[in-house]
Image (cartoon, rainbow, N blue to C red; front, side, top):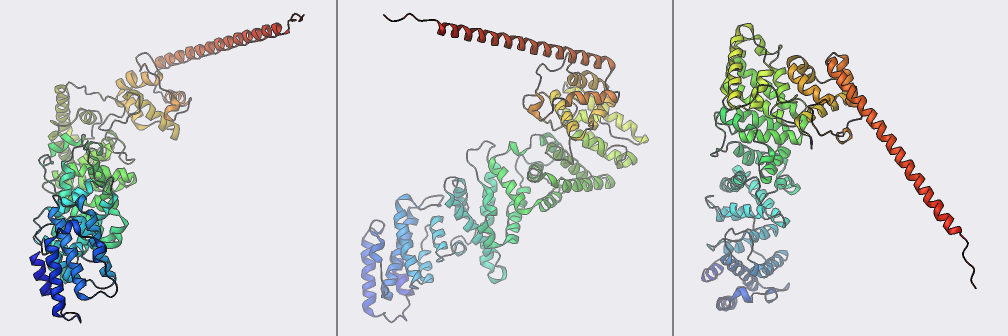
Length: 610
């Protein structure tokens, strides 16, 4: 209180026409009276209401009263210093109303008020600074410049994080965060006009975003708390800072730090990346993490995110977990952009094969695998991609050095590769130059040995077996394969390529499993699915069987068994219809007899009354 009195005596504009000795005596009396009273309980806006004829001394008295109330609120505030204490809200509202009153009538000396306000060592709740920012009395950036000049204090970042975590039922909290980010971002771009302001605001902005990222990465998948990052693309943020500034902000403060995170569980090796790839999906992370990734993709666009992925995967230390999640987020937002990934993968694999650069080769290979696990038309399934990419027309089929690089990569990851992928490599054998047949044979033996150690068969489990198993509710993988090929046939009137490949290269599987399931022979799934539940016509299955028969893919013995079963089913169906018809006729006759009996009874002559 004494410091404020000294400050006012030194800073009051003495050029005012009303600045005689009597005015200072009156001001000092007011100061002493407030000093003796508990301002927190006695400050009322009505006490300080002034009219258009207010004099300078009364103006500074009112300013001093507001400062003292806000200082008292700061003294009562506690970590994380986000909101005004509940028992101080009315006082804060009254003080803000008086300040607005003075400002509207041009009686408020902002410099005097701000200097007095920031003369305390206590920390103000961020809500108070936001109210002053909205009233255009004190900018958030100016407050940060004065209060957090070093940027080492975590008060501001803690307040921002708390507001975001508690914004679900209080949208106003998000507005506070948006204004904080907008003010700091705009000030950080002032550059040569105010280097100190620009530097300090940039440091504090980074501290806020770093704490948010750290919380997101540490939050478990089923975390009860969450952050909705849609505010990053809010209209207010865009209008205040501009789209280019917001894109650069999200890139610099969110995407790049996210990719550079070196957590204890971050991916630092190829083997670790392969081992955890199938476990890394958008469904395995928290809602906050998923929201952040999707918001980054929406704000920056597919091309920029893919470019950043390209730059990140060739660095010595790569956090592949983030790369996999970003890839999934891009494809979930825009499945059509898989062409961008196709170009990136082609470039990485080509560079890896031609230059013997295992970093680029493994990065392209892992990205291709992950794209196959997402819903993308270009990549389809991993088995399809692998067989087509390393087939007869591929670079590895024509060049022994390229083929050796590929086989070196596949050999390196055998100890941690999944059984599904090893089966793909064995059954979808890459085309090898003549001089490399021994290398291919050695790899095949190694992969089969690894499968034996895992107690797994080398036969593909299904028609589309790979790292992505497409599932249909209530169906096992065999029935799922049937539904998939029937849907394709119904839409295109063509037999899928994997079916034809299986009929040639996987004859045992094709005849003993696929055809048995398709034809409904003994050994097929006991549960029979209804075609209409999966968008199939009742005749599609039979038409597809006839198409395979015409191509010579269905042995006569199996086809006869199918026709016998189908005939017996038709006979049984006819008999059921006949029985139902006979039963219906009996019920009708019974009802007719009952009605006739009732009518006869109703027509009987009743005895006359005496």
